[in-house]
Length: 284
Ligand code: SF4
Image (tube, rainbow, N blue to C red; front, side, top):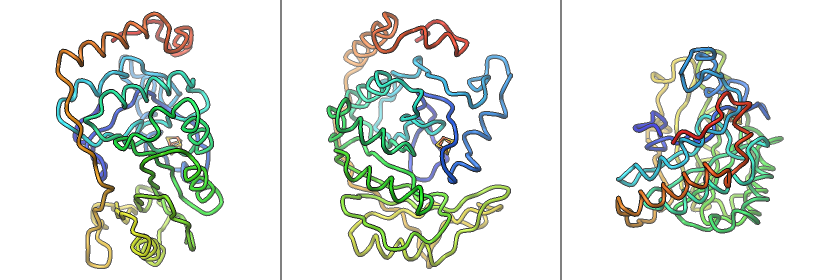
């Protein structure tokens, strides 16, 4: 887990999976890929294998070590619902989120169909927990808007959209059942432009529908200079957060011990899956 994330809408990141593959135009300048590939081949570095998808079971229990409540972005460096992540591993991640419930989790995916299918079946125990927010990325009409439908039709207590990078005018959106919308422009070299009127339209739709609105950034090549004010204002709205008691240190240790035992026994996922990852043991 990484404390003090630089991402404006979260406190910390937790990556029990690393790496991913591109799936739609929003992935073109994936920051996670750029970051991870910088360290490919660097011995001992967490991203020694670049952006290749890997399970990271030694990270699974990390939220238990975090004693004060945090907003936790789950898999900032991957996509939890990637087709190569076994269902049983996703269930294990969800079990940790349900148990370490003093945090608020933000789970964001572009694999909305799998999110939908699992929330309505194997993840039902986690779907309607108000401290777990489920979200999809929406970068354009073709790929993004259908994801909203999949999310809406999934059991979820809190649903959100990450409209970043916003690549075109999304038109009139159906925001029924959506609790939170984050909007941002692309940043870095080659960033695709975002027009002010697209953002204002989204803000207005959120206001009309009573949806919390968070404007993350204008982006562009000089992201810092472009800032994050919209029409003279900073939009920092969030859905309502629930407060749950922090588990005692003793109970945390018991929970962690139990999960580690299940991992070592191969009950969470077949340990053979780790062989191709250059790691054969669970090192918790
Ligand atoms: S789905 Fe997300 S993490 Fe995966 S390649 Fe696309 S932008 Fe990157």
